[in-house]
Length: 386
Image 1: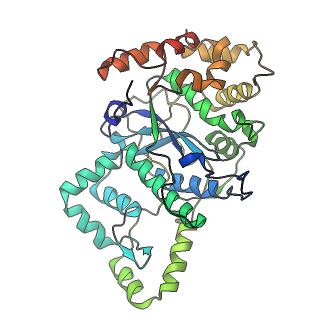
Image 2: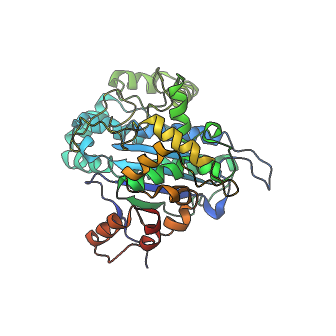
Image 3: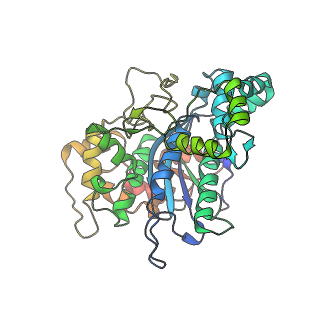
């Protein structure tokens, strides 16, 4: 079966949830300790996380879960064209110019000023195109992957491809598939034996949420969504030295806005609000993420308990006993509780080759909408769903 086209998996005009995987070329080391050379690239994980946090503040894309591994990334993303539709043309312009300024000052990107924003707003056709791109998962991944590849190649003093190809995408079509996929992503370090438990697995969404619950604060990496004045821009170019501008840009990268936030402030809230309609955009107005909409019908305490229980179910110590309260939560979304552990721990077996994730009924329904008779893995996944 050929690889599905992107338009079969998601389009920027629809709200959809997608599991994205991006892997390094030849499975080289993205972050972590390379066993061959002995070089430690672990520091890269934090600037990758901060880049994702920055992009979450400007794109109409909700980051639901993520995990940064040694040679690949996992993200569960939700496109939000309904949120982008609520932004003014000025909002769209400054968000786009923060990521794609379109001009360079020597080798450093110049900050967008008020005049840049006004000129872009006057081009209505261009604004319409940009509005579509800001809710496009492909453009989000482009803005994430390209700088990582460029900086990593510069650090490694080499040229050529850094990623093995275009990112792999799986459309998630129901809550059962979303819950299982979120757990799989959050438990990636545990499954890979990099961490012993979710509490010891930094650079995952579950770790960030747990730290937030304990009251921890970090410096925000969100973009500053206010353009500088035209007068200030002229003054900088005319009167400041190149070294001064370099220092300012470095300082701006490390701390774009002077704000302390929770580690999970840029992530989508976990629980859906029962009093909100599906058509409610729930636009976020504090500049660190696109919306305040949750994505699961479980609270954090239940999710965390299920995550920790699943993490303890290794191949050697797998238990057939699942707490009654957790089994009840799984049955609500249509997952067979006794097979939950197998579904998460052996995720590649069930969904490793498919372009769609969910219960068999939901997968079949989605296949029909894109002109297919079925999705690969549909029959195998039926064993884990009620």
